[in-house]
Length: 288
Image 1 (cartoon, rainbow, N blue to C red):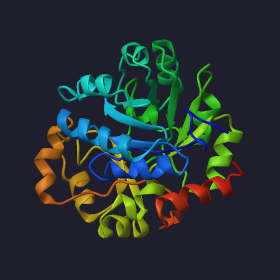
Image 2: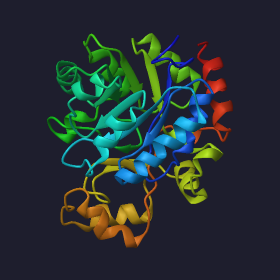
Image 3: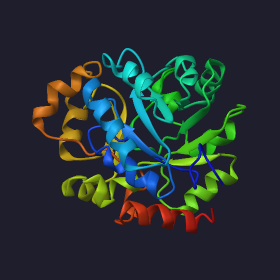
Image 4: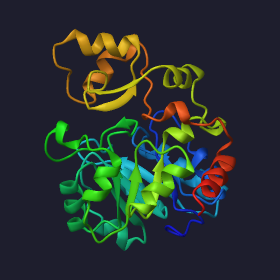
């Protein structure tokens, strides 16, 4: 089952401030779709990342950025100039037309049926449906935070859009991929599963926290709701009040107190495999 030219309908989720761009190339070479987490990169760094990945693979890969007002200066211009095969965005809406005119497929992130419908109306090529189980920041851009916490299975059942839907949230094995496909998804996007690959280079304390602690969704660390391991630092920030500063000011204000460890609800079931082996294992388990 092909997805945007990939052998398998599997996307490695972009993980800003965690993964190196090279992970995207390894995943693409293995037959899935690799993603460059570009949101935290300067325009020059993003250009270098795209060129590094392009030089390392003939497979499909994408670049992920945040929507305005979180989009950094020059980033979108670099994407338009470098023309990666795929572009994805979160935290809002990016006009897909200029990117599509440049030959780039465009994916938008939705946490509710309403958001998916709006993304379809804007003309995206596919919608990434982010269930409440997903690690990292929530992509919510309409309605309240509480309305966005929809379990992935329920979210997939609620979507009625004409474009392909990609399932994200709590998927770390082939069984989860197969379940999403059976619920109508065209593919699955996995982040936490790839956190545990050596190519990601995730800090051991990050993996240990996700293995041993429950996760929680809170804006206490960055100012925007995200799912991370429930560390003592995060507990302290959640209990401290007053309300957090807006994103990303809150993160800047508390970063010197230590890191948080973002990840999804299924981290305990993630396997420590090389990225290429993980892709092949997922494909075999899902009978792709």
